[in-house]
Image: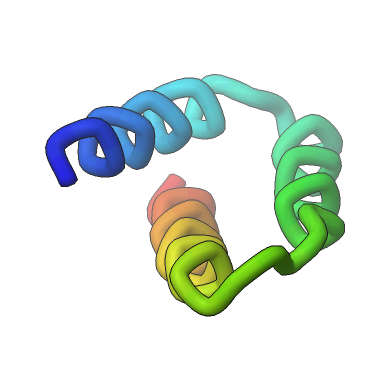
Length: 58
């Protein structure tokens, strides 16, 4: 679980420093990640919510 928290933090830190076009590219890429299993799907949803929230707060 600690690894997931570190990954979440790393994603948010890096995405915050991107330009608008780059942020959209990152979100598009994440949305296209293939769904492989139930836990992966849940993690993707959580990651997308956190990234979108971080982008809105800029």
